[in-house]
Amino acid sequence: MRGLLLLAALLACLFVSVMIGEAPVKLAEGFQALLGQGSDLNRQIIWELRLPRALLAIIIGAGLGASGAALQGYTRNELAAPGILGFSACAALGAVLALYFGLSGWVTPAALLGAALGALLILAMTGLKKGSDVLILAGVGIGALATAVTGLVMNFAPNPWALSEIIYWMMGSLRHADMGALFIAGPLTALGLSCLWFIGKDLKTLSLGEVTAQSLGVSLGRVQIILVAGVALCVGSGVAIAGAIGFVGLFVPHIIRMMFGADPAKLILRSALGGGLFLLLADIAVRLMSGPGTTLYLGILTSLIGVPFFLWLVVREVRS
Image (cartoon, rainbow, N blue to C red; front, side):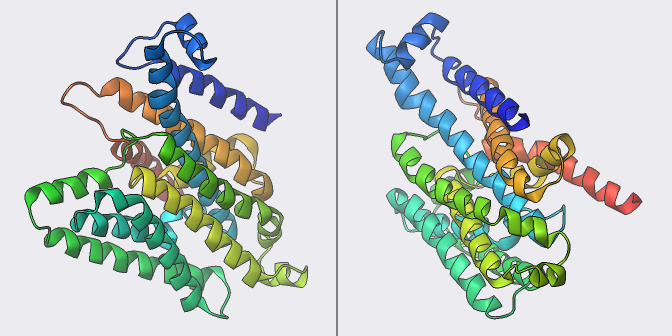
């Protein structure tokens, strides 16, 4: 029932998102355009511009929210976030390298390749040693390395225009969303969400501790491989399409946990819905707050919302 409430709110916000924008579309005309009727201009605005952007916000937010919930369940640490495994940094490095060499058409494939290489490197480094501590250490190290190399690439950017293009991409945005991006992010995120949902019951058992979970038949190695694959797919596809968008995977699972309970098996799906809803609302705010010559980037807004929440979590942990 609670999941249905989240879904209903998500669908309502989706409808609002496709109706608002710089080009005014009346409510009745918007309905007609969604049904494939009405003027060609309204159909083009709805189907080619607004709907892909809104759906991408939902898909990317869902992937980040579910990834955060799964990682928090696996590590049994409420401060865990998708970026802790370094996939966002690796995907960003791939995209930055493509921009550095002037291959703007290869940004998305390069980011996906970066995330995939990061996942393979983590699995290679952890080897037969399974456990959340080793996984986090490997992820933090790989993420730090990718971030350092990204900074090095930016330092040697051939001209100010190349550097500015890299910086603007790293701020995160859905301005260039289209059906092509939707067909890339949709299947990859769906596959990643399927992986995370598949290990939901194992994560619930892991809340009792790794030793107890193993005694109950949970294979830590299998869970870790599926977790890494699922998070890499969700985070990598999101970064490849929209750039760096932070804090969604950190605080959305917290809000869902406070509202609906802490069952890790249910939290993943609910966090996916909550992440999609939050990022869609954030993108609506970005569109309303941006004007001619003044663009507010989606990643900046999510950070402005997420940082105070993160600091509140830190203060709460210190006081507890």
